[in-house]
Image (cartoon, rainbow, N blue to C red; front, side, top):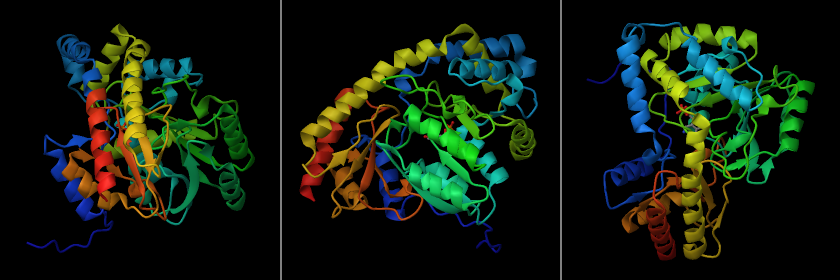
Length: 394
Ligand code: PMP
């Protein structure tokens, strides 16, 4: 029977229907190597240690682990996350840090609290697709801020802040997806200074903050003067596992109080068992040591991709050299459309993410994202060779 109620929100799929269909069909074909979807390496999950943590929590604290808790999250875990952040220069106490169901829910709650239809939202272009989507639900006026390997367009930030009485920005200073870059300390200082001068609020997405191949990065929130102007969003998804769905927010106290109320309304709380298992894992294992074991694996995968791009791409194709994150961002010559290339690439046995969805407005058609994080170096080399073949056939 047809649905008789009109939707209050009409949600479009992130890719055109033909691209959605192609990506779905590719995902079920084993012969197609996937460089789509920025997934953490599943061979790197500490499965035994997490299984022990889950078992221990159920055995020792089963009643509590299966019961409801408060919306702000499991106290000992909040303290552990606060301690991790203090190690990265963020001055935060446990009660300033609500737990969310991943960074994605943090963005959703913040969008609902801080944005009304027609409000200006400064947003990097390109940026994380699901952030464009979740902020888009509030129908803001998206103001694109050019962002790439060489940084963020600070002039555009300045113009936005000067022109608005209050402005909200969504940025990923210490680990930008899809360019795989982090802002310099100088750019971070300028951002804090500007936001203080113009009463602006910055939502900092630090999802990839710890996946750094060259040098550790401090979050923007750790810079002097950022406490009242920067809201930090973090997650265990990239450094440990996305499966337990645990993230967090560090915000000024008035915002935190509102966030906790909204979190309670949205889903009562993040799952108790997952939070307690993570807390038990962190008590027994050093997350820094785990990240230090993963980084060389990711670096190896990135290097395999960069080397085989150099070998197999036609001369006019350009790409980033990521210093962080899970993927390489590729620019095709203007005349080539990534969507059209996808069909040929899948025929040649490789899938990738067409780049148009990463642009908040005015999407160009000639970008694509290649993720190296969840493939072995050999498979990456083969996948990029196949992509090169598909490109030459266009
Ligand atoms: N921010 C960025 C930049 C991401 O890439 C992702 C996941 N792909 C998220 C936030 C959401 O992460 P999660 O909800 O798994 O914590």
